[in-house]
Image 1 (tube, rainbow, N blue to C red):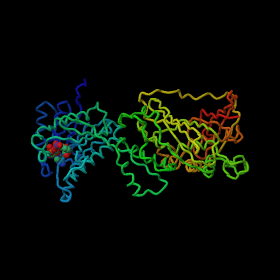
Image 2 (tube, protein in one colour; image 1 turned 90 degrees about the horizontal axis):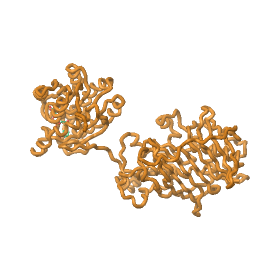
Image 3 (cartoon, rainbow, N blue to C red; image 1 turned 90 degrees about the vertical axis):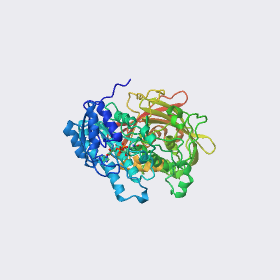
Length: 617
Ligand code: NAI
């Protein structure tokens, strides 16, 4: 059983506590040990006049029951004076319940400027004034509980209440930001939308209902939110007559449009059913959540050849509601196949973007960038790691995987090549979620993408290991350990230094089709904690691949069966990548291995670890 929640030593301001809901809050808090400032202007329900009687009566009630209370008759528009009353009477302040309110209901076309202003002054400006005066006290003492009073009219709209509903929803906006700003200082802010019988509702509700909707049914939630044991903040509750429920925003999956073409009103109209669909909703709680699909679209749009399908085809027999699904349910999920095409130009551009033929006087890499090369034009093997970009963005639409793309980290990449890549092809990519491990705070998602040429023959398989922070703890298997393997003790058999250019990341995003602004936009990079845009991990991967290809395979892509590595750190464009390589003994199946790691010379940090290239011949 929960201990009795007491408020001994705490000081609370309850505005508009001379009647209705405020009175019930004041009585309950005082009965449980709080010292209460009973504030009430004592005017009419339309905001006219003033009197001391309302507040005095409640103070008398509290004192008669043995509690501590003082009356305050200021309007909430003079918030600082109310806060001063608390300090004068009790020497401190812990709790602020913004409750005072009036009504001036009239349909919008008849609403006067005075109707609008009076409502705003009492509800929003009054709530602001009291809270503003209390804020430094609560922050500095590292403790505070604030409740804002919104209304169903604010959340949902109500005829004749344009002034009231907009002011009430503004209070919710105020509370949401104060919750964010106050959290570190243990100043917690929540909002209620109550329903109770009072003089505000007696003109619109039948008398039996007014009597039944006792304010005492609302007060316990408010008291709980104001108690030191409550960690709630930034939440909204509907409450009345013995019913309490949290309310939150829900958002549909929405429709993604490719950003490569023109977005027209007709395109919006054509996909209205998706825009208006709530079958598999998300519940954003922060602006970052809100922006996530936008960022995902920026990242994915450059390669989405076709408008993304309306909804990924779920695996057959998904018996539960999408909202009930978790990461475990996503295992085995198959993405809708995506077909893309590339040509010689794309292959050359990619090679240039990963540093090939940077030295024009060195002809060794000319065959990767010049389609008429006498040595035979060819594609770099790592060109195939760009294939998954065509559908990677869809991962946020997988039922059971609900996450913010900003929290996704690319852990490892493993590419297997079935044969040398054609220099021009139409390729169909089929992806599925091979497994998901529970790494505690993160989920490790293994995404396999198989790419097939026009004849149906497989060209390449990519396995991307993706850490999704915040998605762990779902009770899944931990999976294999992530230890880095030991490199040979001897000095590397080959070491290659490759300098990246200042615009390497910009080139790579164009050539790879991953338009992630992290690699282009300084502001976006700063938001991610980087001093400037960083190189794509798969660009670094390709530099290392070129080093092995040149030093151990004579620049012949046919000799590369696979390449994999782990992304340890980022590289800034302009830095020098040093790849150290060790050739391992030939194994019986005819596949030799080159182990490698890449460092960045300027910071002497390993950027790629666990590197392995499987060689043929
Ligand atoms: P009420 O009229 O019984 O209580 C409001 C109190 O605020 C009154 O005692 C009034 O004198 C006082 N007040 C008004 N202007 C003031 C000012 N400028 N400075 C100081 N005090 C002032 O109404 P009720 O129903 O108890 O309302 C409390 C709060 O709950 C209000 O903010 C109201 O908008 C809100 N609310 C109430 C609902 C209900 O079903 N009763 C529904 C949704 C919201």
